[in-house]
Length: 344
Image 1: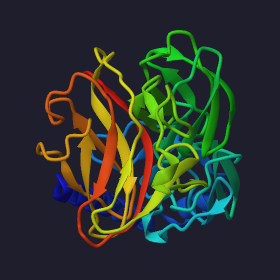
Image 2: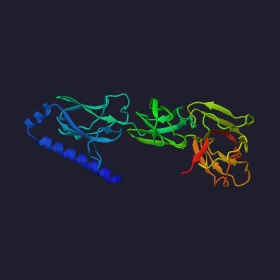
Image 3: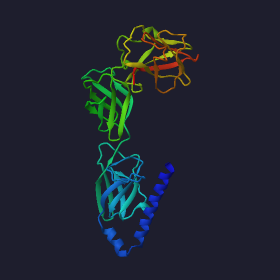
Image 4: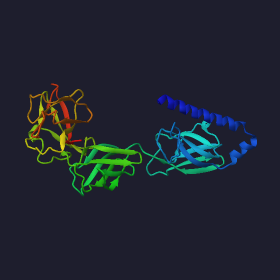
């Protein structure tokens, strides 16, 4: 498929070269007429096999065909006021092949292509879309109630639409990296989706499933004698606040003891963790220190780990969540975003 697209683009280049040859063979009068005609843009389409239909939306690093007339004597192409490179050999009087520069802005811009020729200029409405939206630090608070304000952290949030399940939420404010919305009715146990002109992204966890986001819920916490510390900054896995512990060889960080057996909606638990390169932890769930508990590697980057009830010895309740350092070397371990995962 990749080779066929390359061959197709080469064919487009060849066609452009043929057009140029035809133009070169025209009479001097025809050339003079072309050079004195003001440019006109009739359409823009993507230069890709099977996708030549006119479009008003473009993406960085993609090639497009501008069609119209009066393009001879082309001097400049501006896309959203950005001076954009073009290859003069891919320009005829009726078509231009041009690639949208990767640094072309897409927020608070003119949304137009501007052609400047020796005979005049023309503007054409053309929107440069951002990359697809990303949810990078989740949404907070996770356990939001109807009417609560929720902040979604990510990137490329241009003119976003936010839904909780299938219910659209009121957007209170938004920037490219943060959205504040009002939680709609019926949001509990629903996933959060952000949609823009470029696509959609959905959270990996649902409303109402947190044991810890930036705060602890339902009495769960980590006892102070663990000597862990809380930190608030933009490096959290979720929201803004996480906790860490400098763990010695075979040391542990123990949660307190509670009891939750209302698990009908859930398939297991989740937690985001990062640690030293080559780090390893043992999950001691409900004090099962020896009964084949999960042992897993961690990385210096946040990773979301999920454990099903089956992996946790067919647990029918949550009583205690503890982690033990399992490399024998120790190191700093970080914890965030603890909660339940929904059944599918």
